Image (cartoon, rainbow, N blue to C red; front, top):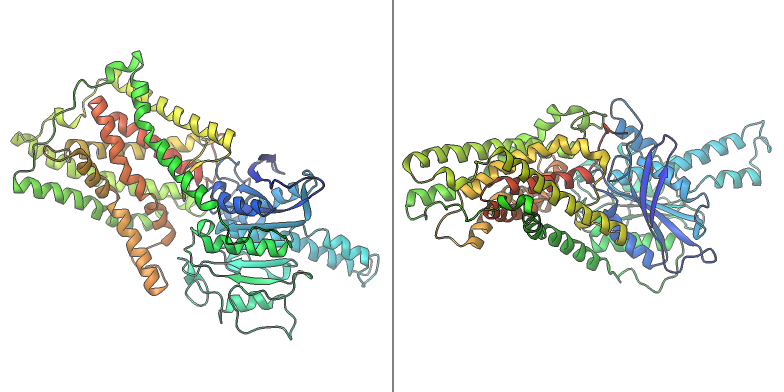
Length: 611
């Protein structure tokens, strides 16, 4: 079930509601509201939602403000995104108010929980403490001399204050109890847990300088002791142990599953911990044990669906090119290939080009991470900007532009030399195209883009799902994000034009099987990402920390490298389009549009040019 509400500042907020089969007005069920992180969208919590709903708990997967299909936050000025995060919980407070208002007769409003990852974890702290501050204010008012009971709190005053605690259980994930995350123990009057992966990349933000917040970690001890009496306080925290008391809302617990930061919503151990926390807090008696998990099947089929839809780009090209108006765009024959690598010099140049592409992308990543912060300072710190307003996309296009320069340099330097010697010709590279043909090619690319997103929208409407592989997802396109797409698409397009020239006009050689050639091209295109991931996570496993050299930022690197599989597949689409049309343009248009739209739709946008 889809929920769409308009909040206090005329902002649209969307969520997907998972309803247990046994939910009814006569059999009310608990509710958990979730929030994704900064670089993802609501569907990332669909796996947790599936498991909780199987156990009789309704789940509202929220699309935070400025993410996915939800509207922008209303705050202006410096770091406005963070202002919203620490005040409105990116919409979580508004959604909690709405869902606890009695609008849904099957929700038990006395059993409402909140959880989220990273930014969503901060929103969880914000939301539960929002109601905690309201409770504190009510208690303070009840203790004033001019209150009903004078300086003594009457039973009615206490009940009125307790009624303000609309959240009864909270589990921030990937956001340890620190001041930087907005943690305020004085505003916590309900059962609260904290879940942090045991090998999180951002572990150096806590006192242990690793992701460990149990044992003798100061943050963990202070969090647990915040609700305990003096005689109950501890100086060592056991992972997964309940402290305090569920019945009087002093329960505290810390989970540390084996997980990196971004994988928490899909790691079985973490999902089991989330299930255990909410079923215990809400006293849910369910025959389904925490170890009985079906979400991996959903995870698998979401990934298969994404790959299948991307594979469908090729028959869609055939379908559109078969239309009478576009038939002449088809090539009568494949352009000639580069002569076979019989000469050692040419073979050496080929393999240097293959390997150098991956290695250069590692170097450009090191340059990109500090550079994009200087080029796009406002969006990087959450300040609204009219253009280039998606920080993760700013990072990606900076990296893409630097790699475009390298690819263009390498290709044209060698092509001009080879052309002089007669080794390569203009016919081989497929660059030339007439103005009318180029216009029609753009029309074909746009038609394919519209068909793909039409399929995605239909599947969201009919099956309420997206096409996803972890953080990479195809989800319905929102018109308000069209200006952002127009911002970023040219950078992707320029890269794939140059890249198409490289793999079709330099790497497509005689005497090498097509499959082998494309695998080599795919590995070359994704090699840099794989090297970056290996460096980061081998260092993390060995030392407990991510690298801290050359301006290395673990989250920026993950944004760049997590789509390595898409970079591996890109040559297959670009090559097939080249063979169908005899030129580089259609493949570059389609791949750049799809990849740019995927990035624009999932990440946080600081403002929109459209209302």
